[in-house]
Image (tube, rainbow, N blue to C red; front, side, top):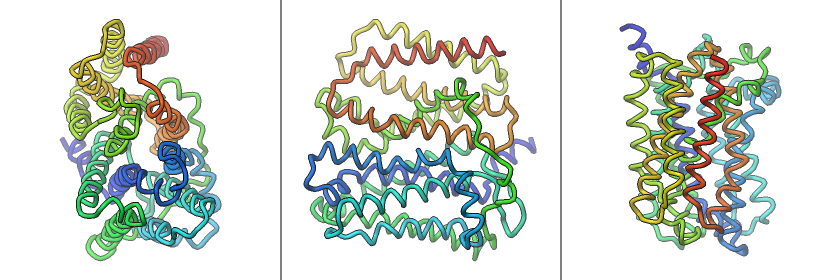
Length: 391
């Protein structure tokens, strides 16, 4: 009972996954406004793909966080509060003006996204709280719930700003309001930590000194986490992507709040149940059940709105099963939190590299839903074989 209470206890570093989810949700939701402001002379669809590649760079760069930590260790940044660093990073895009050259504006965004990705990743690792070592984030059920909460808040924030201001205003620089609001949220977290909780949160570089990112050998059994990550991306893009994609894909790409809520709700209930059943049995069940369902459905036609709705529900189910599998997998490995973060960073980097290509396909081509089922059946069958083989 005490261990369960400890797992549910809110810690100071639980603000990090919330900010992480909020960041990707807010930035992806305003891509259409950014494309008009920065790349107004380009075709809108091309501009959105370019900017999505820039914004997702915060995920791609994370695999190099430990290498960057060696540079940060020798700078004055190491003495600053983590939330204060994130606050100042979010203020940087506010300096961009319409008369700036496209290359210079894009360069600023690339630098901002790189810095944000590196510092958010390092914030998931061991910290110093009031100069005392504090363990990094465990990528457990609580982590994904808080991350999803950030996605929800970012989506509602976009809806509110979009209703309050005209598209013309947002296209001409009004999108900066979103950055101001997120900056104020981070500033509030900083003030809350320093003034109310009386905690100063900094990076613990001493614990990172001898750590290396080397999770490649385990990638084969954890890379499937890119599927729920892609669904999170689709949710963040759902405010505008369906309107600018191939008309045949409009209904599918409207990955709504309900789909994300179903993912988190199922994850919330099956995770403790899976631990009771047993880690290995649950991991086998998740992979085998997804394979069998996807394999059968790949032979059916998917032309009606009901079949597309079921596919989105199935993706929500797959996402929840996959995240639960990942949680159980990390527990079975009994790695330290640093290695767990390195595994997630590798998956995020791979997801970030492939996402612009998936976005390009959804905009210019018709999505074949049977291919999605075939792909899922192949991926989870391979994962099932790997679990059975390695025990």
